[in-house]
Length: 349
Ligand code: KG4
Ligand code: ZN
Image (cartoon, rainbow, N blue to C red; front, top):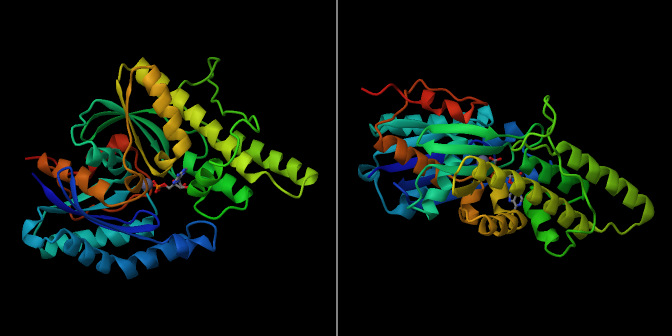
């Protein structure tokens, strides 16, 4: 049993949580969305300053909510890659300082590994191997989860990430940032069959299409052209129908790839992670397809899909219980493939 205090500051949420193995004792998420909303996206410099202002209070609240003191904490963790360098540095420096002051092991955690671990918090019986569809603002990845720290990338996006596509299309429709939740809400009132849109496919040099890779830039351009055409014809843009048609196309294309991949690799369990995993259209499509193919599909609760520190703590508790810890000289990295996570830990023994 390992109890970890974990910090997540890779983008625009200042988050601190205390996690005992797969149980969340406290989770504080201080969102910066209102700070960035007027710019229509995350401004990295503003994000790091805001993390500095909020981090100490979030740490104090996490300990208070869990009703625990430092004697109960076995390790301190922070997201160290990938993400905005200035933002990551705030959380990493805070975690290292707490680890030194309270003489606890320190662990750097890969943000995407955290997203994978979110499902363990609601499904404590879940065991690898399984397939994880990770869909966030920066990633669209199909990951074969073999064990703690052991991952194989089976599919990715060739251009925009799924969340990025939601955010860009939302901007075209004059919806507020972040675009995903706004499109999801509007899509509920729209007709998903109103506008047929092209599903992006990735061609293979040998002919045919890549079965698991995605591409969203063509879809985004198709929505742009459609909006331009409709604006010439009407002053009343059918925003709900556009949102529903776009969401339907993304959900259909991701569902097709994830089901095909699970069947090809003989994996009977699929999990979801990342902000877009909160999308109601994607959940519905996946659930229906999973039933049809006799596959088990597990979603994290909505508050654990978007960035939070509980998922980071859950990954850290597993690493710590296996004897993994990081050097205090570990730095932050804006990019790091998930297949490289074990380089974050000191050699055992
Ligand atoms: O995982 P996350 O919080 O941050 C990253 O690691 O990127 O994901 C944020 C992304 C944003 O692009 C946001 O628009 C999208 O997740 N998102 C959604 C929904 N909620 C958040 N996209 C579609 N439907 C949603 N309900
Ligand atoms: Zn994330």
